[in-house]
Image (cartoon, rainbow, N blue to C red):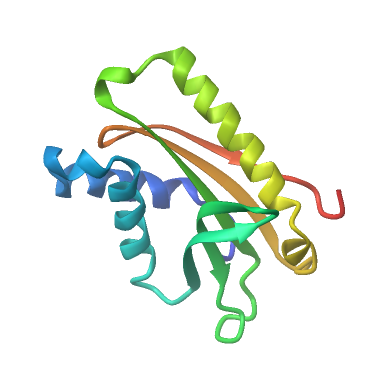
Length: 148
């Protein structure tokens, strides 16, 4: 993920763990249980500084995976993750597409933040993860060219 940019298997695996290790009552806090779970798992390794609710362009990305370049100078990829959540009884394709569109717009704004633009040696990718209850329903990538 950090060196090649292939993030899908990582989040597919983490989604499987969320499904296996959480219980229905955990979802009283909705998106926050997913965010906490991902934050815990992504902090097991020290490849990234995993930051929650990090500010970019007057907004807050759910998770920012900032490469630990002092220890791993050859890392090429960083990630901004926007989580979206629907309760199990609220799922519809229309609602999912609306949430995905909102998340994509948020990430485009975050990815254009000057602090990321200054780190031109890195490729930052936005990722939208849409969960319905404990199920990961949609994963999408959002990229914005540097110096937009």
